[in-house]
Length: 259
Ligand code: DAK
Image (tube, rainbow, N blue to C red; front, side, top):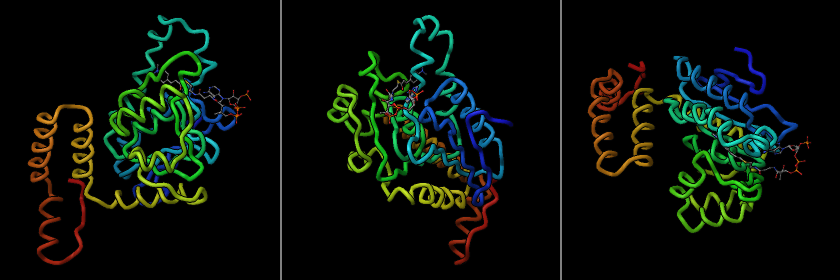
């Protein structure tokens, strides 16, 4: 598929697909086409058997400076409703394969919400996170008051969303929003390395682990535990479980089939 605002590179390393937002002049502002294309690229990655993990990135100056303000500025509430933009965000949320955000520079508003939809965030030391919607008369609309609060707690989420200030990667690391901060010249490689490690794991187990951890975020404890338990039993129906445990007993390296 041809993309207008994305560069998609399957198999940059074994099992790793890179999806790069490529709208640099606008600091990767997320207009509707960008969101549609990210949804399409992740759907394709999910369907691609060779892909085991995705790295979603921008460039050194900006992961994404938010939803496209120019595209929204004159819209009425009904127009916003009819655009049904949340459908694209849902596609990203429902991606089955792990998605790692490799973040540098501005990661703001919808950009921050997009990074939070990913499963892990590797950031450069120059990355800045924020929910500045309050400064343009609105509020976070794609999970910024919910996922952010769950990740960093009420006090910091309030400060981030009510002041609209930008927070450095190191602060977000301490708050638990992101996985690691590395020198700017290394953040992309570091994300690829992490993706490559995950790409070598048994894919059915990876998928069900992702689903189960997300359940902890999205449901109550009883339901989350129930989903975890069912997924755990389900893995005993896979050849990879038999192979993984046999390999352990026989003191050899397991060979995963994804079945
Ligand atoms: N939208 C559109 N254009 C943007 C943009 C944005 N969010 N951010 C930057 N740009 C554009 C600038 O307009 C400028 O374009 P030209 O003027 O050159 O044509 C170009 O990118 C370079 O930006 P600056 O000249 O401003 O660069 P600086 O280094 O001086 O400043 C900055 C960088 C990131 C501090 C500044 O650009 C800035 O404050 N940007 C806006 C940040 C922001 O407020 N972000 C939140 C946007 S609201 C939804 C889902 C999500 C959302 C909404 C709905 N649904 C599912 C319905 C999310 C909403 C948001 O994210």
